[in-house]
Image (cartoon, rainbow, N blue to C red):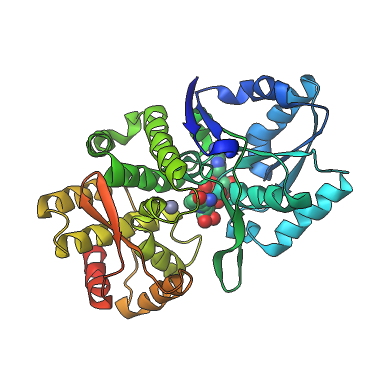
Length: 356
Ligand SMILES: NC(=O)c1ccc[n+]([C@@H]2O[C@H](COP(=O)([O-])OP(=O)(O)OC[C@H]3O[C@@H](n4cnc5c(N)ncnc54)[C@H](O)[C@@H]3O)[C@@H](O)[C@H]2O)c1
Ligand SMILES: [Zn+2]
């Protein structure tokens, strides 16, 4: 088993990456079992695929376990679903010793993590990511939360899990578009932090069928763990993880959540941000071309024609939520990123031509 450390003092934890890990989780967690209730939070389909088996193993090893399911899609990240989880946990006689196992993609991880952060002022939880995006991104770093009518992720907490268990074999049932979405975030890690990894991924994408997920997941987790360890509360360095996200979020909001997946929108956002980096004189033309060619190796959905001016209000909204500062992430080279507050509306509008 390969293990990565997230160094956060008393909140430090490990990310375990191994094919077949799912079957060993209950024995690994045995030391943490003191007779408390263990609640798996997941979705119906994922319970059928992995959850019932996990619960069986837990029970077999003497755990007192139960489960709660959420609907699929962004709708699960709502105040309603959040309060339903809390009520169900009360009904199940959960208390401050109860431990949550978040089994699912980013949606499950975000809501279950927030339930853990708030239930009786905070209980332990573990992340068991099942989507590629959750394995390399959302399960690490402790960002938890839900959406409200006014916007995505506007309610939440930074609350770290006790461990993250990544079993790449779970990807076998993940729909192909979800895999592509996760690959977008993997390209991001190379682009912002590791030139050699970027080249490796770019090369590997030429033959997607034989892509080695375990290796790419491991390196991505290492990069995220390292950045989060240095800046847990996103006061500086952690912002570079948002490369491609300013425009990506705007595209996601414009086209509708669920229509364009997060990683797909971020992939388009990275092309725009790469172009802007070149216009600002930070990224060589060749490197921008390399970035664009690599992203275009992903079979992304074609974007319907859109009016560029409709995108700007979403970016302004993002900015408003960041106390008025944009913190736009640019590349200073492939494998090196920084942030700037100095990206004009015109530059953003022009960058959108690169993806139309
Ligand atoms: N907390 C963070 O740091 C962070 C970072 C990035 C994204 N996010 C959030 O993550 C969410 C997106 O996550 P996502 O892309 O994983 O989407 P998701 O959780 O909706 O999962 C995508 C779909 O795949 C299904 N699925 C998941 N694993 C499967 C498997 N192994 N086999 C078959 N089906 C499977 C899910 O049931 C779902 O229908 C967004 O809400 C986003 O805001 C959070
Ligand atoms: Zn992302």
